[in-house]
Image (cartoon, rainbow, N blue to C red; front, side, top):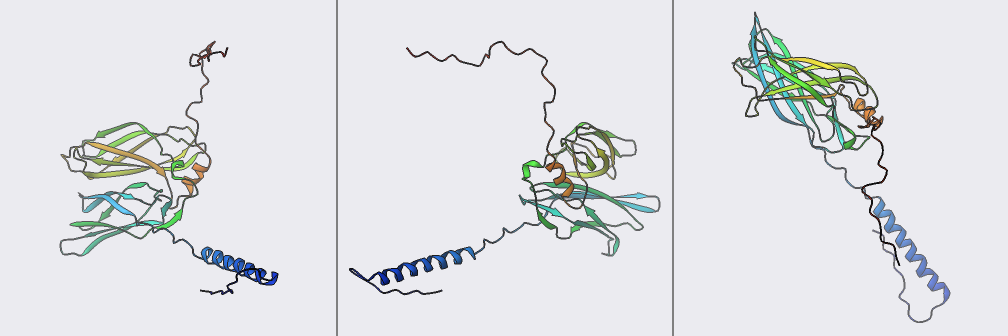
Length: 280
């Protein structure tokens, strides 16, 4: 701290004394401003990604075992993308020995958004327990406000149970942006009537043009034979370990909803207009 002392004066003083006091006051103000500007506000602490839901299943196929898993990652940070995410799936036998391990790169999680995912791997030995862990995400501030990241609508969806216990999921996805999406990821999560996650499946749809509605088809395997299905969540998102593809679409803008010119004739008089009284 810098202490500046000035003489206490009273009554009429020479011009030189008054000038010294004024200069000292200006210097003190300058030091105060410099001190305040050097105090930077601490950056807000970013919350780690949260595994909101997960499930796994093991199905024997010939001499091997097929391990399926699905889950949902959540991003509670309003202004940041979670990027370069890698899930590590580990299966261990009854003695705790690792019999299968797989690193699965995941797509970026948008601000205040979630990421449904699924995967599959073949194991030579049967795992009794499957766990999913994640490496810490790399955080990057979004270049657009969160409201500009519009979802990709899913319509005409159907879920069909096959004789082998697999569920076939079909539907259409729409691109609401002015630019074409080079590649979209579609993930379906199957839940029972109580909301418990049973399994999931994923597929890719390439070259989705602006306003396009391509069809997708995927399968969800590894569900219990007599599983009762209540709800199936279908989500489409941009493909990639960073949020750049999503941001590029958002920077290009969204297609207007109403693009068809009205066919009815305009009203001869605006029915919503009220005549104002004329002053006398």
